[in-house]
Length: 423
Image 1 (tube, rainbow, N blue to C red):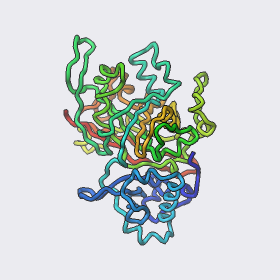
Image 2: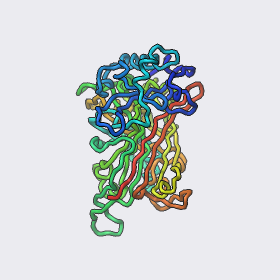
Image 3: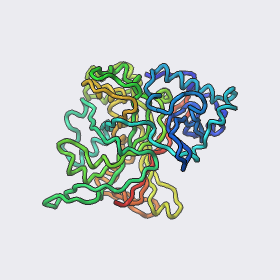
Image 4: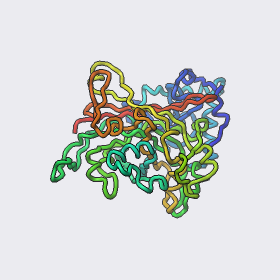
């Protein structure tokens, strides 16, 4: 498990003034990684760290000698901590690096981004027990959760090629859909397009084929966390998902935030992981004292909606939901990685593990429209008079997240936004 260290000192301040502002997503205690270039340019993608409203070009500052983010992610945990310490030292008030490093800064407003690394494989899990229960009740009132849910982390392999970064715009998907009163399915555009409020966990060091990762070492193989929206065509999903699970309903687009918040930065925001009374204990390979003590992450997640009508009127987005991951996830990130490798599966630097929809226990904490509208039966009334059951063309869905805890500096994840276009 990552531990507290000098880079997390709440009294630290940066010579980048915007990093010291109250409520800033990217104070010096955060230092998330991403890939960027000057907006509108044809420059190569570079590796940067967000600090305040700026980006520090790591190669330009002489901190690394590569533009390969996967190579940076593949180093040992000790080397990773050493790089973080060097970045922190150079960005602190009074640092002798200020004059030189100021030349390696680019305002975030002048940058464009790509996915934070090369994503070779993407597995999406189903760790949100409140989401699983709510959705299960819609389709299986007598048995919302399948018998294996509390024993094994459920996951499926997604499509890495359609993963995009915040600002992604995608066409409304089409697929086979069978209406309840129809004798046969038909090919048509999805009418029940939804979002899913998730986290993405990036693998750092991989493991060799045939060598499972022990639960005690799992976090040494996790590089960091981002926001993830696993867009879902619910009508396509309802027809196709049995018996092998999601396919065209999920693989048309997945949107990530541009910044990876490292496991080191999240050390002050860990929480105990405890099963509800009466639930089965994890099998021994998925259990450890450290995972029970502080295996969970306490992150506030929000979903916001900006419709085309709001945009035309110059209005801002409205918040649809707010939840906390410590109340939502039935499995920890370490358990996901351990289970993924227990059969000998080899994970590689840059592989992505999705958490699944992280809904909270109350209805207003639901992480999808499927839950918020009771399967489309209870439309949401928006402040401007519009209504939504599912997403319409022109809608932009925005995910936000942050961590806040007494005795620690607030850190944020930025945004993961995506816009639905007509098919």
